[in-house]
Amino acid sequence: MEDDEPCITSLSLGLGMGGHVPRKEKEKQKQKLPSLDLTFEICPRGEQMIHVDQQQQQQLHDDKAKGLLCLKHPNENNSPESSNNSNNGTRKKLKLTKEQAATLEDIFKLHTTLNPAQKQALAEKLNLKHRQVEVWFQNRRARTKLKQTEVDCEFLKKCCEKLTDENLRLKKELQELRAQKIGPKPLYIQLSKATTLSICSSCEKELKPNEGKKGGITDVVQNSSHKLQNSVGVKGI
DNA sequence: TAAGTCAATAGGCATT
DNA sequence: AATGCCTATTGACTTA
Image (cartoon, rainbow, N blue to C red):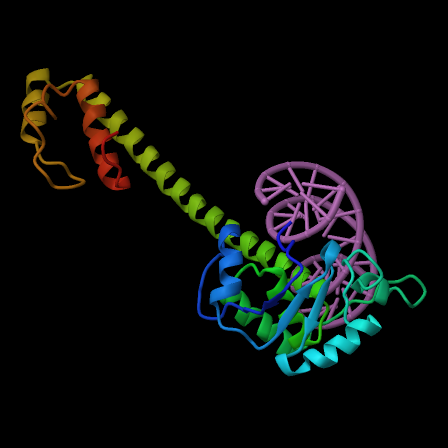
């Protein structure tokens, strides 16, 4: 239970602080963030009272008495579903106005999650239901996550392609070196060739005395591994 | 009219 | 147990 205190809390829409708000921070924000002059009363059982501004508290008192402003749980009568289902069982799709969407987007840029009071304030401001604001933020987070997943996927694909290419190139190089080793030329010539090739073609650094010497498979793999590490930017494999 | 978009729903999980 | 969030899905509506 996040708001179990049945008290009036001042609204904080959280403008001015970016990023995700951890659960623990939510309560703090209620107190320290600028208020929109809207106040809320959290009713027992999670119902919420909304007070449009401080001067309307007296009016609220009257409305409260009349039961006009007490919002019920989203799954109860006041839900968009129930209000939309009024016409022969089909649910009508609500389209947010440009202004509503723009405001929601603006808030989302600052905060990807809102606390109940913030949702209620926003709902009041946009003439929407609390549940609608809640749903919008849920869907918006889902869309963001999906987009990010696509971006990550694309990045990994490119990484994979690069590594595949490099792998292919190294295999070819290995094949060539093997062919040289079993080729017609005397081994000592190849050895001398290997010793003269002491500059890494990838990073253009001079290889250690052992590297490139002998021209054996192990050394070739080490050399190739060295190049691969340079090309991929990996250290300390 | 098929495909895409997006508000809304349902169910599951974590937290308090 | 109540609540909020996430995820998958539905279904109304739009668009190419």
